[in-house]
Length: 255
Image 1: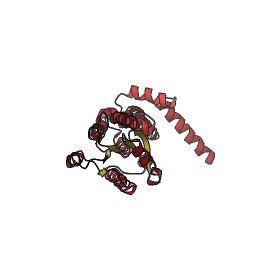
Image 2: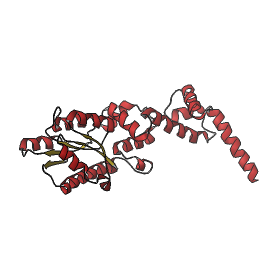
Image 3: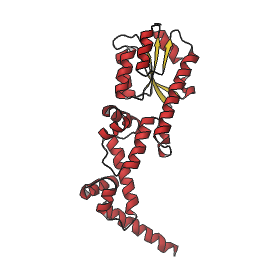
Image 4: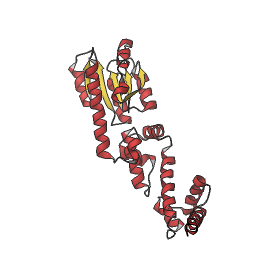
């Protein structure tokens, strides 16, 4: 399901937009704002993928709102509503990469059509930039792309900053979005990936502990053992001993 934030200073417009059965179109409304500042706060806290906003609002107008949102997440799909038939607004909306520009009063079918277009853009972005499989349950396509990248590059030095650069997004926004989507911090998720890979490597007795540490992207074998013990309540050597003693016992039972 795709997350969306709605912003409009007219109560009747907000009610009209909320009367659309968004769940039927695989869209979840994460928040509704009556002005631009409230909308920007919702955007930062809820991390939506679609932004449906009026142009003229108190404080931050719709155009400035989109500009601020795109600085955090360049992939945000923005749709503008306005009661002003002004080409300058349309031109600026196009410059900002808005998906659609809708004049009030608008037909719900027209709004739904443009929201579906935004969803299609997000789906295309996700399909072209990361493979599915383990990441298929992740709703946010950018985080799915990042999680896939982490699983393929856990042996390298990866930080939140390099991850944000990879996505072309603000690192603070990525951190917030990652925690919201995965339920763990970026570092916790990366460490979990590395520890699971370490367990796989420990099953091969030919791999030495310091070699395994390096293979999962941790250069200090002492620190690796410390982290491993924190996760599994035993050292890598103890884990290996337990693994092989269990395997040996299983083989003897079968004989």
